[in-house]
Image (cartoon, rainbow, N blue to C red):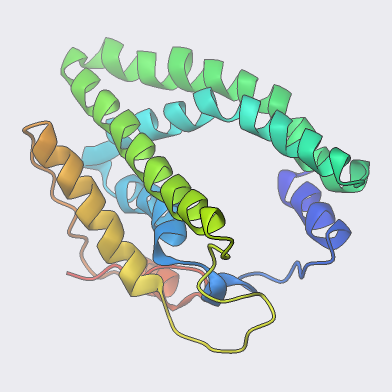
Length: 207
């Protein structure tokens, strides 16, 4: 079964909507930025090693959290329809880790050893955004407050896509400065990018 279908089952089992982008207006910018940065890097061929480093870091660190998500849901009384997505990713991401590190990243470095620093940079980008997202959630939970911009039952609407892209660019720029390197994340306007920007869950990439 495709992973999106497994996640659809999880959402339905939790009593949540499985409509695309249904909760996007509830998400803080940092949550969207942590995902949008993948597209931000992936749409630039010059950053192919960076996005592969990001991908490798994600796959290397996701198996244990997915196991914990599944265990937590089972402790709360949910069954396999809800936990299947996370259970599947315990093993799947372990396999993806080998492909990302031993396949993709190794091939890039074999072809051009100078790209190793960019792969490490991609790992740093991933960890920076995961830390920012984690701090947002944990700091909110410590004061018994939702980490969402508004509770799920709320109705207030405000677009956060531009803010998430801006925060994403600022995060990547900050890491690049720490590592003494420069990165140009400006992306020209094309029909494909404009279409992405118009999608409800997408981010608008502008100069």
